[in-house]
Figure 1 (cartoon, helix red, strand yellow):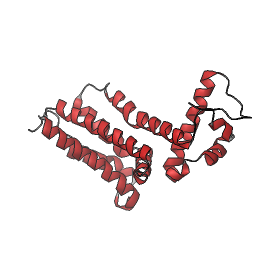
Figure 2 (cartoon, helix red, strand yellow; figure 1 turned 90 degrees about the horizontal axis):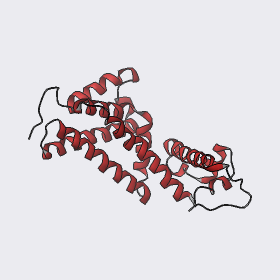
Figure 3 (cartoon, helix red, strand yellow; figure 1 turned 90 degrees about the vertical axis):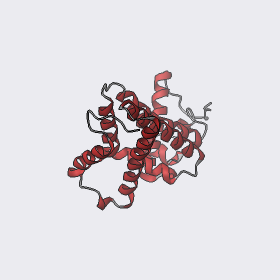
Figure 4 (cartoon, one colour; figure 1 turned 30 degrees about the vertical axis):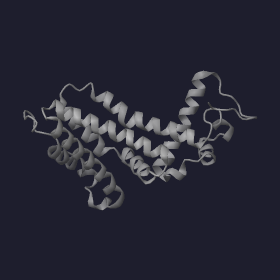
Length: 206
């Protein structure tokens, strides 16, 4: 449970407290995106937000608690919310198309993922990445299964699709000049979709 600090001004009402906690989490994610795990530090974030450290302690016991909350926010936004949105798409093939397209074109998603991959020695980060990996690969398996793939084939296809996504994130970091220009990225993404998504009307392989 978060503790108070002498001299800190308590937010007014539950909504204010909630919004302030969210602001810290968003600031932590922005710092993670641009400066890596080292950027998630209380004093620098307080300066960015224009508040004192006392504000931090209304919501979080320490930096580790903030990191866990920020990771949970990232998981919800980058995985759970995406899967929930895809549930509104009736066609299983179109779900795969949308999933691969969003993963290929989202700049912020890959930057945060790369930052987390570089900080995998941090236990909270390792656990978050493992949860996300299992959730995403599991969902990909479901998508391929609904296209008619048998379990083993669906698993292989899901692993290949996710490996493609992870490979793209590394290329963006290590060899960005090898990737298409922004104007051509959608055409490249269409090529990836064609390679990973069975043609319309086809049935999955055993």
